[in-house]
Length: 302
Figure (tube, helix red, strand yellow):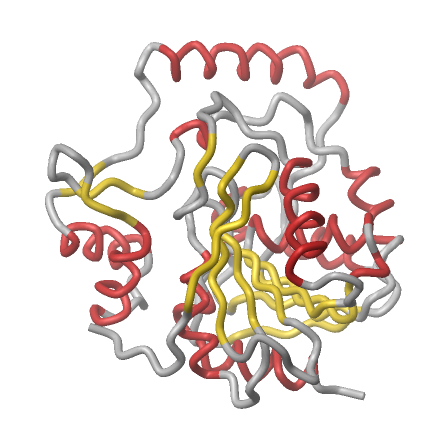
């Protein structure tokens, strides 16, 4: 089992009819800006443990479990709206970092939330790090009828019990699943992550700590013009980090490319990019030392 170097602690905040779970590392107060870590889809805040362990400087760090993930609980829903993450984050910062411009890091879906939030509330962000938060392929208005129909059909399937997350016989089974998805993930890290990514249910099966409703497609199309307007409103310096494996190309197979993503980044006024070598999409698991070093060099720069 992976040996944690910097133990975390938990708090729960009643927020928007949810009990929001937040993981904390470091002191309660620090001369450095609060570092806020946002996890990706079907992940949890604890996913940053390896990167936190690799950070050299002591600072206050918080990482929420997004609504419907990890230990954040609330009333059940049958779909999720992306804008809710922005409001959740705003209220979390009001409570945990009131009046402070924070350093914001997001991975994958969390990276997309971080980019959008930094455009909505630019004064709340001192520095911004996006780990493989690429956004989505551009869409066209004429795709809307089909998308709304797809959304309705998926809602029906969820209520019919046809949408579910797989469960596993043991924590080891969860770890094997994580290692199958990410061949670079070592067994000790996989076993540790499995204990935070899933929990035993009443049937004795290990169930993923995620709401199946997250599998329902968004009813709204991804509007590139809106995304670029948000990018243009970001005032914080941005570090955009990607892995040496082209996960974007593997996902979209020609529908959206790294070249297009890099073109979008030109709409951010102060941006630099970096590549983490020998890493895939879960780069903070594959190479936490590289990720931590890149983050600290950027966050500590004058």
